[in-house]
Image 1 (tube, protein in one colour):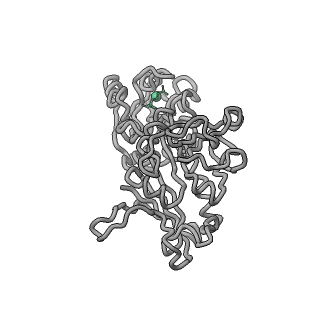
Image 2 (cartoon, helix red, strand yellow; image 1 turned 90 degrees about the vertical axis):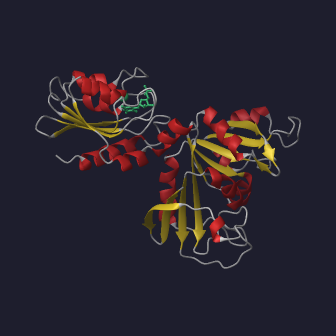
Image 3 (cartoon, protein in one colour; image 1 turned 90 degrees about the horizontal axis):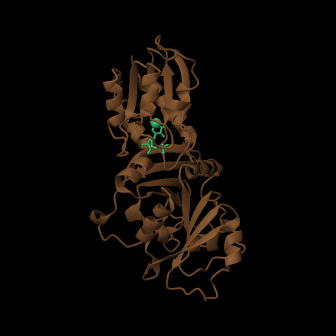
Length: 357
Ligand code: AOF
Ligand code: ZN
């Protein structure tokens, strides 16, 4: 039997947990009876709640899954965490065969879930649609292997690579369909990150549960800027600014607006981005989507795992270098930063490129 289509279904189910399962992985599960008919599905809905396999298996009556097959995009767990081990429940339900998309990269599980299933006499088929399963959980994999946050950059540019017109207007480079997709992309990440320059130039709202604002000199309008109108905000500023500085917002305002001020080291006229990344990981933010101007994009680039580049078929012509990655100049093609195009998608009339290191 071919399990690719059913694994694809697991991946689709797993996406139902986007925006809610972090720091856990996205997991979906399909259960077949002994006649290979789908009898249940489930997914991990929220961190702290049941895992995908448990959600799928607990919907079934006694004996219904016996002799059946369970398909899941991540190796079933073998540890007592917030819930008991999924491997034990699979054994208890007398499943005969388990199809796994990828090994769990969490060191407390890695391989031991599959081992436990095999020791109980269950047939395990591994690595079905492994590449897709790894892409689905690229954030979880980076977190587990590098112990740092996954970093993605989103930009919207004209055909000639500009992020704004000379008068500063950048809001309408891409069309409604592309902007709708950006909302879906934001939902995949624990936080969005932007700069004081973008907040001051565009006054964006960027609706999200967590927002990180790099505001070295505390120049943004904490009272009125749209960015502070919803969600929890983490504002990184130069740690040398003293608490009695006139730009420092009062405690009562910070509490009322859910703003946490985070002092950070500055190198020259920039906040050190590496220290921001380390700090947000400590706070529990496992992934960020950067939506900012060329300067911040340029300093983030060395840490970027992924770029979403929207391209609008519009040409502005030379407008004083409002480039989407404004950092140093490469003197030759050999010095350029190189990314791979993973996938393209058309949001008429605009194009989206998804790139990786
Ligand atoms: C699965 N199925 O649906 C998930 C798994 O804190 P806990 O107890 O929820 O455990 C989290 C760990 O369990 C997580 O890091 C990963 O190794 C595994 N997650 N495993 O079989 C699931 N969410
Ligand atoms: Zn589990």
